[in-house]
Length: 453
Image (cartoon, rainbow, N blue to C red):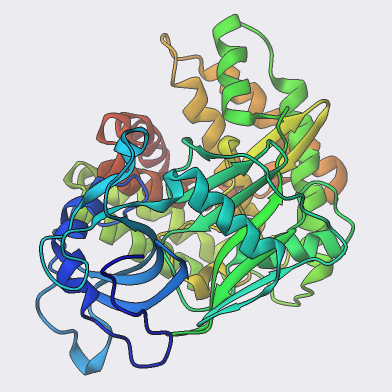
């Protein structure tokens, strides 16, 4: 690679490349679908780690700050750490035009063109080679399941459907998910899928290879898994059923059973004696409601009614024991191949701290997420078909109860609280990322608030 500073892998990071990159990244980062701070200006960028994966490709961990005021008590400044793979060349091929980030004007990369290396087939293939041959590169550690052979030369393509992360499909055989927002610790998408494979649960594609960093802290960076090329996601299948006027209850019932199967396997892999802590959960849900209402004024008139759902938790049945769960279950997180349902993306809600996503929670939280997803699908067509969503919800719960041994429909207060909490999360997410979709969760908010009042 020409004109590049020698990357540092030690605990002293050479920040000089940011002289070349900071201006380019300030413009490029907010345009990426996986960038979480679209509603806040990027006030500063700090290089946390940089490793030259191979000539012409830099692996970076960059902290994007959203506040010029230092946090109190020496805490990290407000913002997020992002994983970037940047290509650096003298000239960029016209076929990579969509990958262009810009041309560095100063610093050690001055005069070189910077681009998103994931869009470059050569860089993507070299990344797969790193995963095929476990080892280290500076602070980066590449590891693999020795029982699985990954062929060389698989043709890569970027999967455009990703939002909070980026994925590469190799030869329609494997899929590599690269986590964009990086937090210290093991990502549950690797942790839980590996544990489920160990339990013999066939509902989840098992990890084949993965990589992590040891600096500036231990963190998971990406996971390679089998790609279900003939599968369709639940969201697409549900919308197709709505468009054709077809019934979806049989699929919903089978999906409920698949969810229960995953929950039972997780409970076995991560034994927990914790019961639901309703008081603590009610306080956390109320806090999230207040925060969301602060950022989304349209939510404020409904706050008193919504609070009643959380207040009612104190006197209701705590339900099944808390355990490890999926954490962000909806129709977009399940795939149907043939007659079988598969569950993917165990990362949890990316906006929540990793420690919370790796904690134990009531399985009702996953169930509420899927029930909300049926409502989301039903509202994609006009006129709205609430009876379609109601039948799917009933079938899903019946399928779950048939295997789990308890019926979510009989946990009225618990289910209502978790559905309300999920709808509040959806309002904040849509307001920040997809404002045109905001009416969908707001319709649920209005229903839940009236019910609460």
